[in-house]
Image 1: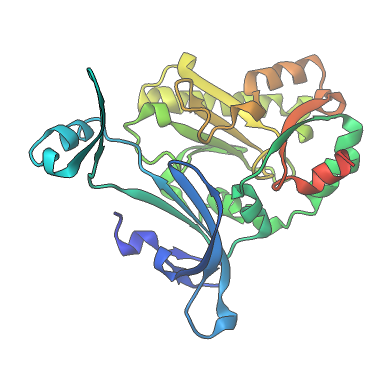
Image 2 (image 1 turned 180 degrees about the horizontal axis):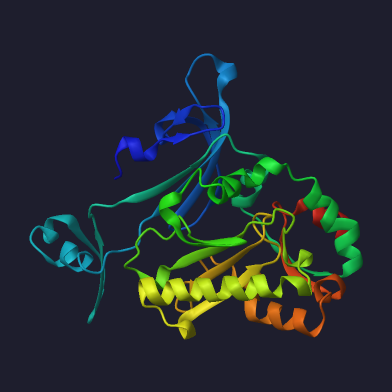
Length: 307
């Protein structure tokens, strides 16, 4: 387990929080390897100073170099209980040391809670008219503070250690979820543009093609030069709808577990975006785009589209 100093976080109110500062936990989503809670963070007194918070807990992936000896080495029989046997097949429950990774969001917004809540999804076909009438007003109503963390990176205030390349108009940043640089299959970089007026692919025009090509070249160059990952092993894409509305490109490994965090079902490949804009500089003004909408996360959009 990480030490207490690493587990603490500084909030926008200046408070320092750690998992043990959380209370009133309520499960909003759970699976075999992950659970998300909403609750409050802060001192027990006075009651009015507590911040709303999200607490995320997940299992750290197995270390293949050590997990085998954990169940076969000395002491393994004392930690094991046979639960099934039939001919050559058998299963065991084995108690081994475990590590959990914890993420804190505090103070959190309702959008943070909605993002991590259990929900069903629907496919939506967004025409340009739907974008103008429904999606765009939704985007414009999101508080600017929701992307303050992006601005902190671009302004050099936070995550300096994760910045892998800086060029005019953008940065290539190691995503904080890529915890083990030796695990190349888990690779995840972000290309963050400097232009705060660009929120999603809908804002892109033909004039942005040189920027997109430069982001592509820089991201692939970093992965090749610093990590030895060949271009053919890299998937570069946008999400639509994006998780946060500041234009960014994802770079991940083609061998990544796409069901975990990469949300490939809502991905639009960077190369396709470049090609489309070269064919028609206003392609994303005119195009219809299909995306998945969550019943909780995107409730305001769904209420209008499915009414």
